Figure 1 (spheres, rainbow, N blue to C red):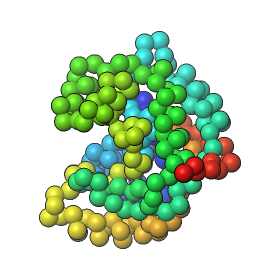
Figure 2: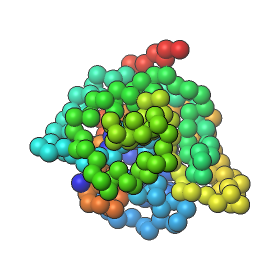
Figure 3: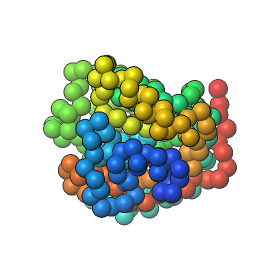
Figure 4: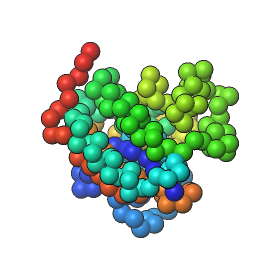
Length: 225
């Protein structure tokens, strides 16, 4: 089993329903769901989310129940964050929903989440390390991978909620048009980061599922520039 700490809106949130209809599955529903189309197969397996603490195997002696309890306590200490405006962007070759501008409080929350749950993470094994293609990473990304098990954290972090797998260049304009139409109700609007979810992968290659969603404090964090 692997676990991850992600942001996802609540089960009944409009954005969750929009994403579930697009991806072909809902990470809150633990059934197998429909087989996703190739365009969305990868993000569908992980479930609609933004990564805060990337997927990891539990360290020896740690349990998912202990992790869930720790996440509940952690969330009780953290303030909710408000993304001022949600945008659709092409990141490399995939489309994702991202903040319209840098959100310092959101980055601070992500940084603290990575640090807080590091004690639950088992070291990467050789196969896991190889899958990250370390030879293709920058020196800084490789440092993060070696120390924290994931390259895209801290100064390399970028909040994003993935909607597609790699999109061929010739299809990008058509896919973007479909996404803008589908997610029009959410684009240009604020998004509350008001909880963190414990996702689990029951067995290698299985779809990730929401095990628990814990609310952050109702006080809104103040962004520091």
